Image 1 (cartoon, one colour):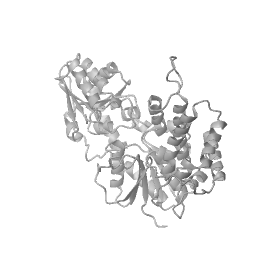
Image 2 (cartoon, one colour; image 1 turned 30 degrees about the vertical axis):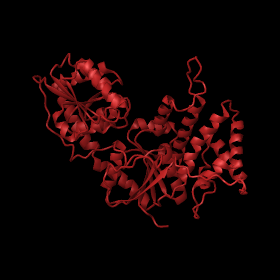
Image 3 (tube, helix red, strand yellow; image 1 turned 180 degrees about the horizontal axis):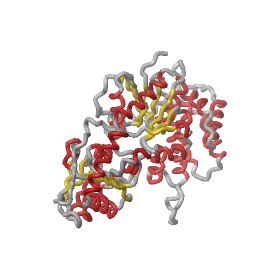
Image 4 (cartoon, helix red, strand yellow; image 1 turned 90 degrees about the horizontal axis):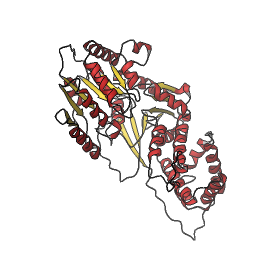
Length: 500
């Protein structure tokens, strides 16, 4: 069978339709490797989802295919038509489900072959079988009895459907043939990558920017759309409901299967790697390739402050959304003004993603009498703003490996960042060689405006510290985070398996 591309990237609803960190990384990856032919297999909710290109397509991106996991195409069977029974097949499926929930995923290839279209384009089991057949219903009843469930069967039935049907739809796709499948997460992308590698005898690589199962667990714990059979109770509930546990188990299972069938599992920093091991990843498959930046775009600018300087520009770089915790930054500035009264503050980033939150931030500035101090720039070319800034601050509640720290350090700007993701190793160094370069920023507590303010004041009030951080940041990024050097590691991986 001919290969349509060298590398098929599998993504969940990001590039090229959504701008953001992962999408930018994918675009840079493709653009950096002119001689590698890429295809995309993009997982999306439905055809109704807005698909507007946010990036110009590089010439070496040769094909884009989509799979819409919530567009179910079924037909109600005629009551007069005799349907072929598939009792044995459903019994096989039932056994695989039971074993998987016990942590045994060795039968995953058999499961895949039930749903991936064969040479004739047909599935052994299809959506109609799952929705309308007597054998499917009997399997569902058997599982309910097997686990001796006390929850409502109706709620169990619909949760089962919403869990399983997207998977069946996911597998019913014409997968581009490639020697390498590179999933940019676990979850649906990872499990489809596992299926593709099994069916086409190819290699699966996984890159996780954030840990998929951990992120879904947080979302599910906070979700209101998942039915909670205990929500009418007046007693406080410490444990998650049965159906929230169901969804968490489901996504953890997707991650375990993805890790099992991957040849290489890559992430951005050591903390993520520990999470991958907890989720069942084989340590021998793990490696770290951090994000990098274009050194031609973010280049050092000579910076030097002395004891006579008291006019500073402090920049917050990021989207104005709750997860970036802009309010903590604003509160910290109120404290900083008591020590450094001649500061200017720029909040640099889009304000239209969560307009209610943006308005709350504006109101907070007014309430704290900071409207003359803090300016919201909206979306701008950040490279043009960095030369105006003396210190960059991040107060995010969650990050993987924020490029903002690398960009600022590359230009000689020290950083104050909350203790999330890879922020600590970006400021203090990851390896002994890296740590020997010195500190390029301070790490503060999450949602702690006083701690953030103290770090800002200490750096800007101490010229020797500031100048040392500036030099350390420039050297750290130059030595360890050049984009071309890091993408070369991916090129080496691709070349290793393309001719395997």
